[in-house]
Image (cartoon, rainbow over all chains, first blue to last red; front, side, top):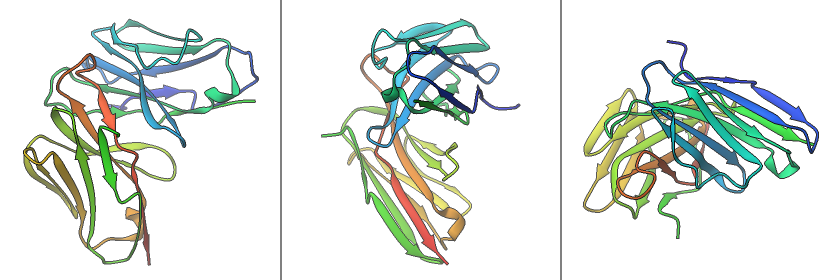
Length: 114
Length: 112
């Protein structure tokens, strides 16, 4: 298994542009998480899907952020319009459903908004 | 007060030393995770435990559910162990029952 696959690995964009981050979870994992990591705040949950349905999006900073999971093998996190304060590393993680299963993290996307 | 607290924040050790990183949590949990993040940025899950102790190579993780405390130990530390170690609690209650609540991390540097 190739693990959780995120793309792109690095993204540099200008303020105001739309940014789309992509994630392919491990096949068979029912839960998918988008996290953001910054120096100031550490790792924070943005949104959590279970069986492709958003369960908790309370961590999504504002309306500029949106996430979709159209099927079990693909999710996107979109920022429109992007701002310099969105610069961070964005991680996707997946897990089988249930309390006894661990998480697998993707390699992350380092986003820089200039 | 954070729901998951780690100590110390930074730790410098000499190669070969025994290392302990502590994690305390205040929420009800179904499991506790220890994660490792190397300077390159990738996050690796080291352990997930809900009771007792787990061992993998030179790494040992323990948890005391009554005291809401977990420790990560590294025996015979090596410079390649240098990384940030993150404790994360899997919440038992609340809206994000699948979610992890992260500690701020412990930055470990092992000198040769």
